[in-house]
Length: 476
Image (cartoon, rainbow, N blue to C red):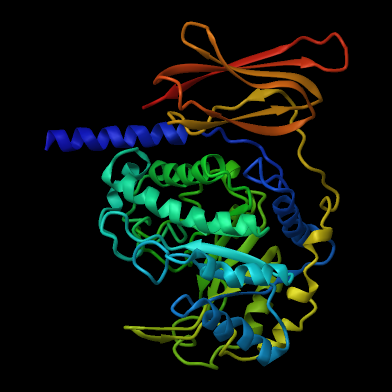
């Protein structure tokens, strides 16, 4: 018993170190969480920002594909069916990498085919991943092991080995999309504040926020630094807890927020006829584009086709939550519990909604022309700062971020505990902004290292240099 408690304590300590290694940055709305994101990815984020901040509100239509079918059948049963019904192609389509199959995806090129085709036709695409349980290999609804989230970020543990297999599978799909020039709105570990998924809430206090946040940040670092994926916009989407809910295991929408520097877009999932988002203003205070990441009508109206009037949704957004920049209607599906009808495929007054001047469908998307948001500019840091590397401890790769308020001579080096120079990461003139470089310590022994940032004025003016140093831990 004592050995088990000690082991869990060590795992939680490791997760805490991962959590504490991320420093909260005051990033602007237009700055991507991944500093190395592609220009196209940054432009799409800027476009979403402009939709809510411009003089006229605009709202992108979206629909989720049903992964119970083949990719082609899934697309035709949702998006093509809506087109035949209304004459409109929705602006955004979504797909789940791991919802239906147990285990890892086998044919990523086939899975990605509708996403690539739709993006090249002018639409936007979103991917979620309903990760199968890493302890049992069962579905996301198997909550076995959910008290051990901290284990997943500790290298070599049983849960971590299975978790890394899942991340590698998803990363392979994203690599194909990146090579095809596709930017993805990525929505992992969704509805974490509810008690129905293995990564979700299990009571009033568990899992600890630090365990979930460490898991999110570990995945973020692995994809952006280790896998070098820079085509992702990261979407945080809890379930909107209705005002009437009293279950303590159904926690507040903001409980597990990973931090501004790890999120690009904030949304909520709602399955009610009328929208009830009690923490709307709190979520908007993150200064991220706000979205309705999943939507479906309530229990009665989703039980049969044709019951729901989709004009209700549009009226609710216009009058109560006008800063929503897109909605994603969920798909219709059958299960052992019966059929559910959530989508625009089967309900009423969809043509009226998709032809409303507020709504942007695929033919009206103009993200390629997005520029600076009305009355705002990209955030320029006010001071020099060297941020803590992430992850820390690390093995063998870590990312180092720093910020510059003006064009400067920059020298960024790594030293060992004896003060010996190990590596030079940056040595030259750089403009203002937030930058990230990676260090691969594969050839170095485990131990403590120091990252030193030296910044000097680049225009010849007699201003003092800035020297900052952080400690890094290489764990092997």
